[in-house]
Length: 537
Image 1 (spheres, rainbow, N blue to C red):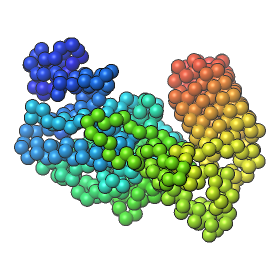
Image 2: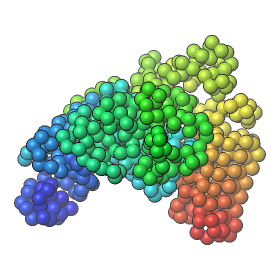
Image 3: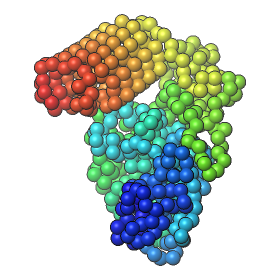
Image 4: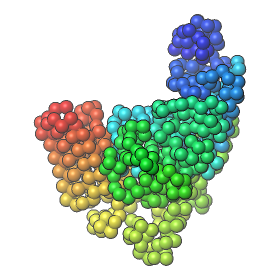
């Protein structure tokens, strides 16, 4: 279908092969190359369309934003035009970042203004939560480990997004990376007329912009700061945990504080971090994304994320790449060049400095990280990070070492090689095994409740009668794993490979899992399905 961009067209839908609208005569091939296929949405300033570029081989898809203010007031039109110009400049300033849609074109045609951006195929976090339900604490921590380095990169370039929310974060279908969209909210001046809006849509007010509930007080009071985005990320975390928009939650009538704690099951430490992210007073809130990551002790994630962030984005066919040096692969002798790698290096430098002043104890009062021995340089150090593009080399650990580290407070075993270990009936609850190797590992009868196994390899693992309640398995590999009699109640198993996995007698009550996934696995009359019924779904 060819879609007409004339807002007054009585019948904008046309056959795909025509170049002139059959209803109003408007040219359907924008700038002689872009054919609009369908509308994606409309806001206060314009409409967004899915299109394809017919001037390039393969006719790649793209997103076109058309300036279309709701009012014909000349002053509002001028403000909207400035907003579009600012969005184009902002996308150029951010550079060719793989988690931001590339700006492909920016032009005026027939007294209309257009932005052309890279098309990101995938679902928004809002769509994911509506379809699959809320995430556990481990899933939200994984979200933070991906979005906060991106936010720090944006802030380092002098940009405040000002409209971070689940509807503006897409999980890209190609590589499952989170992509932040809609940078039109970065303008200081937006509209001369206040627009009352209590829905989930972005509200445009006198020189302020944001989504009610997600925007902090200082932003709605016309004084946004970098920490304003931190607040919005915090509210997004609450949405991911509860599945509820801010307007659907209760508030303290005396202080205005969001009352969310009673609706979720999270650790006290994580609750304290979220509370500080959501502080109404800027001085009491985290100042930067790096501060949040440090508070959560998520720096082990940064290593594995750095490689993903080093992948160049789609090329900009209309301009030379800007600031691409931030995403080039560094040599073994160079310093980390990605925003994530730099952040990881800074966090590790602070931690190692404290470890040297207090031998044997790190910044959170636990023994040195796995695979380290005090301040000695290791394969996981920042010096090696450039050579490995930020990906830590998996270390082979023995069962005694794993248990000893866990008893001493260690919870993060991400990217470690734990394959073929004998760990029956152990307590590793709340452990983080993101991207870990656990193939043929014996965890029969183990307590692994609320643990994170996202992207981990659990092929042929023995998880028989293990407690995996509320565990997070998204994108893990459980092929041929023995899960007979395991407790998987309220576990998140979306997008997980269950080919030939044995779920006979397993308890899947409330688990996030699809019927298609279950067809890959072995079940029997003793299996309790997500609806709570035994032997059937």
